[in-house]
Length: 237
Ligand SMILES: C[S@@+](CC[C@H](N)C(=O)[O-])C[C@H]1O[C@@H](n2cnc3c(N)ncnc32)[C@H](O)[C@@H]1O
Image (cartoon, rainbow, N blue to C red; front, side, top):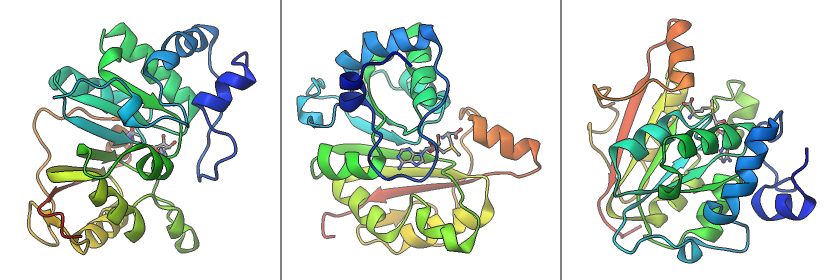
């Protein structure tokens, strides 16, 4: 790994506690693109979205745990007016997504970080700054003793809502039924949010939605996905 210590300290994270892998193999070509792009569109620890040179009128939408960037690329293609904040702790995923966004000519529409979503939301996003938050197929952590590692928790839900503008959305997907129910039950009971499908219900899969790696993996294993859509109704949270 040739990314310098200084570069890693700014743009990636080693010391913050997260659940899930952070490191893995990154090719020379991918590393070159990280070095080229992260100084321009990365979100280093000391900076916030206010320092990120985001066009004033652009709705800011965050994807948490974008994996290899399937949905990030798709969303950037379909919403050229949005600025997308991609948050992913796994460096090879970040590297792959940066390459794909660069190839598609979409990279300057994004800000990308390897910091954990909880940190980004708490320290780098201000109150009511986001127009939307997307979470696709978060890690299921199936054992009961690991449920506290799941990304959607009551505190995290409150933090997400505090960072959303009134009228902003949270969209989630999971191919694991028990996790979909877990997320739905937490978000259904989070103040300020309305479940678009009605409490306890899921929305239909949108026809033009792409299959992310993990949705496809679920399908291959015989599992269909559930989709959730919430809107922030008030700032009375
Ligand atoms: C099961 S994968 C899903 C990837 C992709 N969204 C998809 O649908 O194919 C979950 C992703 O969430 C990332 N992740 C886990 N904890 C995270 C955190 N605290 N902040 C940001 N990303 C996280 C993991 O590294 C992993 O890439």
